[in-house]
Image 1 (spheres, rainbow, N blue to C red):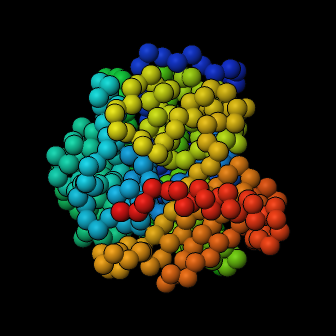
Image 2: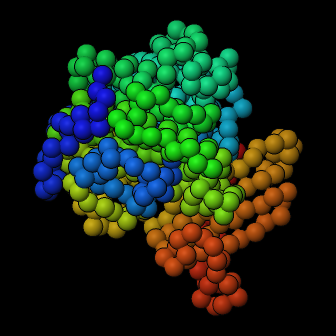
Image 3: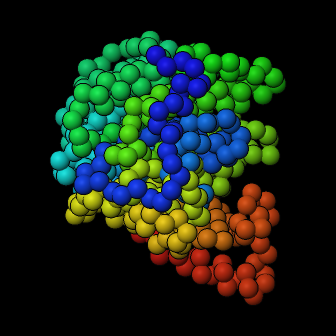
Length: 436
C-alpha cells in the first residue's frame, strides 16, 4: 500500500501545464465526492496536496455551488434537477425512487456503452441493499457501499458499519475509506474501458474521529488542542486527500476526465469559531453551499481558475459534453453545460445565476399548506438574495458578495439601487418551479 506522502504524489502529477489536451473518442470518467467539505475547508484551511495537484492539472471553479445538505445535493447531482421538483427539500421520506424519475448521470453513461460502478456512500433514490435498484439507477456495481451515513441501519460508525457489495449486506469493521479505495482500484484495473465511476467518500461526515495512520501522510499529527472536533474533522479531510492521491496515481489523466467536489458545506459541529454558528451546512449561506470543484482530463485546460457560476446540477450535461456522450431525453432539466468554461476558463460561462435551497417538509404540506421552514437563495456573479422563513415569518437579505463575501452586512433595501436589485432577484425566486 502506498504510505509515504511523496509516493502519493508520484506518477499522475507529472503534467506539463500547457493548453487543454485533445479530447479522446471515449474518455473514462471518474467523479469523486467528499462528504461535508466546503470551499474554505480546502482553500486554505486544510493541507490537501492531492487536490491541489489535481487543480494544477485542470481547472478550479471558484464559484461552484451545491445544495445545503447531503441528500438534496446528491439528488441535484445525480439527476440534474432541483429537489423541489420531487419534494426533496431536506431528506427522502423513504428510499423509493421518485415518481417519474428522470435519467440519472450513471444512466447517461451506461446508455453510451460505458461500464459503470459506484463506491461508497449511496444516499440516492431506491434502496441500495436491493441490487436491482442499483442496476435501475444506471450502475452495474455498488461496492464498499452504505445506504447512507455510517451511523444507522445497525452500524455505529467508521469501525462498525453496514456494508453493501452488489446486494450482499453485512456489518463490517474494515475502515470504509480504505475499503472504498481497494474496491475502486480492483475494479479500475480489471474493467475494460470506457468506464464511469462514482466514488463517494463517507468522510469527513460524522461521526468525527481520529483516522488511522494508514490514511494519513507519513508524519502527519492530529493536533490535540481545544477545538477537538475541528481537529478530528481536519484530519478526516486529510485522509480523503491521501486516499484520493492513491487512486489518482492509477488514473491516466490523458484518457480520463476526473471531477472532484464537495457535496455541501462544513458541518456545524466542525466550525472553526462560534461566529460561523448557523451559517454552515444546512443553510444557504456561502459556508453551507459554496464547495470546492476541480475538473481535469482530456479537453480541459490545465492549471487555470474560473469564476464562472456552476452548480452540481450541471454535471450531467458538462461531463457528457466533454466525453462526447449524448444526454438522454429528460435528463438534467435544470443543468447546463459548462464544458466551454472547462476548455477556456476565461469565458464567463452560461449561467447568470444559481439557486440553492433547503426546506423542511411536514404535515402542513400534506394538508395543502407550505413547508414550515424554507431557506432559498439566488446567487449572481455579484449579488445574493437569501429568503428564509421560520414558522412562515419571511425575511429577505440582499448581499454584495464582492464587498462582503462572508455575508455579514446585508444591503440597505431602502435605496433605489438596492431596491431594484432586490426586485430583480426576488422575481427570479418567484419564478422557480413550484415545490411538490
